[in-house]
Length: 168
Image (tube, rainbow, N blue to C red):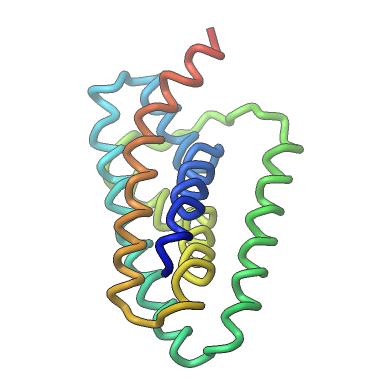
């Protein structure tokens, strides 16, 4: 990936990280209901699930990139269109979070992230947009995976303070 694309990648990481998704809403729910201290186990579960999903996505992208080569450009547009569709659905929704009967545990946080379509598609879009057009090396994909990790801890922890101000 050319260094000139790094600001674009970092901006997309921050923007996608702060848009409401299942993990963000679950994190907010748990921290508002149980407090920050009790929500830490769930936050570590979210981070672990995100890391596992990002690593699996990097490996799959590496294999797909090696096999499909020139068709990767099409995949990035499909991923981008789906993320825009998800954003539109969130915009159209009522904005009310439904109560969840899940407990705020490490395992529930990890499961939320492993089944989170938003981050899976975002990871694949980031890999196919910022890495595969320039390199198919697994090491380059893993570097971008490390950059994707900065969004998790920042957004999970800060959403409680951002949204709690709005809820008061």
